[in-house]
Length: 294
Image (cartoon, rainbow, N blue to C red):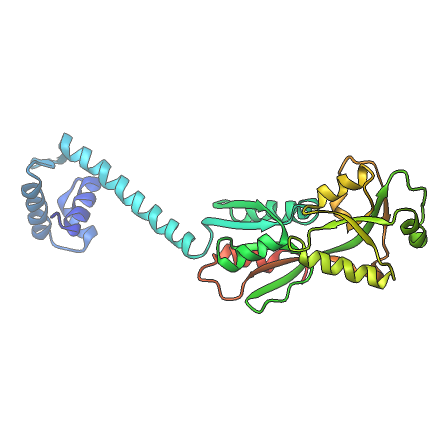
């Protein structure tokens, strides 16, 4: 096996092409350098240098080996930098599950800033319901989750990252224009479209509390498990719905939209992660720490 010191001596001599100068550079006397080069050539089975009284030159084989030494040194240094980046969470994969409506609010700009700050981190995004997201965070199959509504689980750490008003949606046929007349709206559109409770448990509970504060007992006629599906059901006239305001933003649908005063409650986006994860990269914690809210 080739001695690493011999390779260092070879590299230095290949650069300086002078035994005296190389020995001085290495901080050794010339005889040990000469012996080390001779031993290396014996081990390799070919000459690395041609020597005359006037000069030292690399052989063709020596020049090829020198190029490989330089490449391997660069590769090793790159490996060190890459390893440092991995240890600091600046390289790797970050898996995030999110409710679709968060793409209408805080998530796009946050992801853009994250990629700028950590260009070597790859993102893997999953659009899922809050219930699915919580389940996968708890199982450790994703790193972070963005959900709507309250969550009470001592295995998770959470952070509120965005809040907004709720909106009451009614079919376009409803001729009411003021949110203050919400009781009249309910009178004209008594049927409501809502979530499948297991799929939207947290948001379902928050909206139920909103109805309670509004002193309304809605008749849930139809159910769906995604906000956009609920909006479409309202559009085709199957009932009214209460949803977070951003869920309707930029959608080309024909419905009446009545913003509900925030004093009755607001929709909250929460970022959740395991309190004691087996692994969460530094960039994951940076994302958790720096994304909106408190």
